[in-house]
Amino acid sequence: NAGVTQTPKFRILKIGQSMTLQCTQDMNHNYMYWYRQDPGMGLKLIYYSVGAGITDKGEVPNGYNVSRSTTEDFPLRLELAAPSQTSVYFCASSPRGTVNQPQHFGDGTRLSIL
Amino acid sequence: AQTVTQSQPEMSVQEAETVTLSCTYDTSESDYYLFWYKQPPSRQMILVIRQEAYKQQNATENRFSVNFQKAAKSFSLKISDSQLGDAAMYFCAYGAGYGGSQGNLIFGKGTKLSVKP
Image (cartoon, rainbow over all chains, first blue to last red; front, side, top):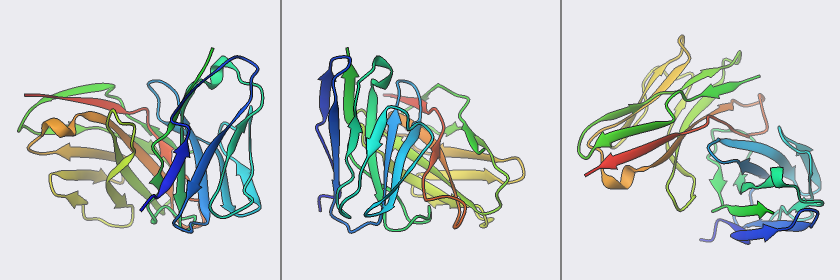
């Protein structure tokens, strides 16, 4: 089973560039999440989605945008990359919006902004 | 707002010995779950163990067990018979129960565990 797949695994961007981090899951999960993990820190929620067409902000949404046109895909867009966005980004999914259902994490995307 | 605190940035244990990682949390909710995740150098987030707040009994998973002290808001992880493969970052995480969130987790800063042969 593929589970949650994130692409790319690594990327280097220049300041001001834009890019989209891809996330797809094949488990038909309604809930999907984007977290960022800064060096030496835990994960922080950027955005989440409760189903196709519905997204909402998490703790640290500034500088990011998301969309959810299908159940499977939940891309994260950086419009104007800044050094503060250097981080590891994790996508996760869950069948329901309750934590008694374990979240399934992707392997992360390491992003460096130079 | 809920917070999760891991006060030990780094810990070290001798192979085959026991180590305890500490975690405290703050919440006003009564229905919640607590988790320990392992993150090896591969960056994967691996669920180690979870505890439902309404359960008095401490969770166990093979060599991993927790000491859940609800009144003290403490949730420590004990690793018995430590193995080289246990070396990783360990994150404590909190999740509000049904109706209290959208299923997202709040993470501590992590504890880096080294295992000496």
